[in-house]
Amino acid sequence: MKGSRCTAWPQELSDPSGLRKESTTITDNGNVLQVTDRGHTMVIDKGLGRNSFIDLIETASHYIDCVKLGFGTAPLYNDELLTFKINLAKKHGIIVIPGGTLLEAAVQQNVVPEFFNTICNLGFNGIEVSDGTIELSRWKRTELIQEGRNRDLQVYTEYGKKLSGSIIDAELLARTLEIDLNAGAKLITVEARESGVGVGIFDDKGECRVDILDAILQFIPDTKQLMWEAPLKHQQVMFLRKFGSDVNLGNIPTSEILALETMRRGLRQDTFEFGVKASQDKEFVYMI
Image (cartoon, rainbow, N blue to C red):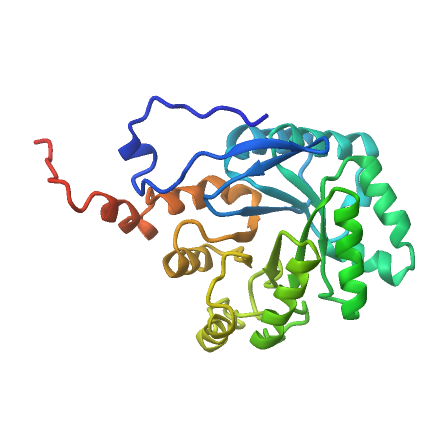
């Protein structure tokens, strides 16, 4: 189960925004799952060793909903270390998934059943279905989502290509979102890669392409089922200010979890106004 946090701090200091409600855990067919209404945070693990992963869980597990073992890194671990990481994360109510690129490789190599058998045997409790590198037909994408759900896995999907310069088609994203959710997906992620530069809604400097974001919002006015990949701090700030502290954010570096949580709560200069708004009706008394 998830570790307990220090409760000695007054609410006004631990969460000035007053919006970060506690998360809980449930058991679904033997899998420990996190239930939260505080915004989903997906972390990308690009190769942490045992000690670093233990440190990550000890310091930040309460603020992590999902750990993605990025790209095709999962088969590169020895089995003992891999299962240790998976089991430790699950013990703390975290979904653990291999990168979507690994499933794309399984499709390309025609070993999809072997992929599902292996990740279930290892203890993964989620998958990512994407076609950032290959082309997936609509029926195949739906089939992969449904196979994941049939195996009691949480399914995240991803929309967008990884090729530099690729952009998001807002209308197609909306159609994909609807079909993916109906097939059993939990959230659909808007592609930005681990760099956050030159892909999706970000230009080659990592700045938001406002016209593309505005187009997405025309087709998807309620973005609660979207998760935005935002590996860079200024991107996280932009999404938090645009959509609020409960926005779903993905591809967060493992070293930035607490930093992101402070921004969600208004405990960092970048979003300090989150806390000020919660206290605007109070009289401020300064100590001299």
